[in-house]
Length: 372
Ligand code: NAD
Ligand code: IPM
Ligand code: MN
Image (cartoon, rainbow, N blue to C red; front, side):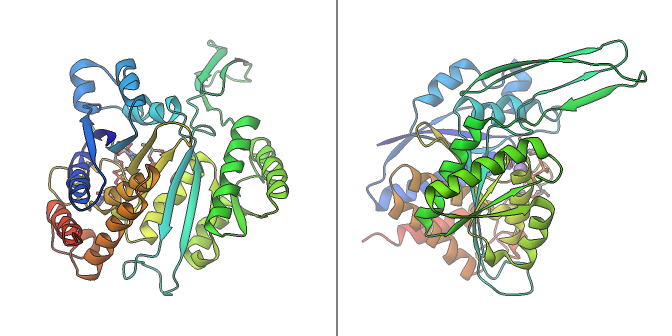
């Protein structure tokens, strides 16, 4: 019996996790997989009524689970950043989920590229550092000093910024931080991952030609790790990578990418698979509790209308099952998705006529049909 935390969150997060749970129920009917799910009401409604984001009580309960199944967070009634930083980014930091695995696979016929070449890119997005530290502030002529404090599992850091400007303008800053320890574990994970997948190299995406300090140190560490593992290492600047993903996606296997660029490239990657409704992701702590979620957000523009494509959440469920020791069961979800795509059992974003729940029902029907 696996103990899962269910955090539907906001907007279409609720709709797609609802489907995801029905799919897990179907899997448990036809296999040895069994689970209990504890529902957490973390999200905008709770925040607006109580002011609570991710509480210590939430953290203590979530930590005891085998995995967290997460929908999405974000609500137009709440200023951007409050829920995102206070819930999602805090979860990733508190549970030290330092790898965000985001596969980008050619789900034909929904790949919007002209050439029909199969691809399978495994994005490993670093998930706790870079420009996601919340290490920022403001200053001006009269407010001259800025104090930055960040906390991660690996360290607590305080920085004092003494400022002096030639005018009285207002300034705002956001510090991108990488630590040797953080990069080292990221690189170690990436090379082991590539090896396990039979890839001969890791592609490291950065902007070392501009952000020379952080990405310079990152290159140095990746280079040493490549030697240590006897593996190849390629570099791509992120701007060229965005282009190459369109022109030659089949040439990439394991791709390591820092947090902010990884966020952007994997939305592009989702679209290469047919749309944001197609991308699943896993926030992974190899020694702790991991969290599985679609790449997309709460999509306020379609929330409450049952238009959301639940495939991303189902593929996140596949990753979760594989991560907690049920690879065959995970594969069932993937096959069920393939079956739906092959039979036009899709939502409108993929040109189909079904709503969110109907796609879920089709997936469940396929899975239940696997019963021996
Ligand atoms: P979004 O991913 O929510 O939506 C972008 C576009 O894609 C929208 O037009 C939406 O309708 C469409 N879309 C997304 N998922 C879809 C699906 N499953 N099926 C069909 N169409 C889908 O991004 P956004 O609009 O920039 O952000 C909305 C809110 O979500 C913001 O508050 C943002 O901060 C938050 N967000 C949260 C997460 C997360 O929780 N992991 C991820 C991204 C954005
Ligand atoms: C994602 C989202 C988050 C991110 C936001 C909501 C904080 O866009 O999971 O891709 O930037 O990581
Ligand atoms: Mn994103």
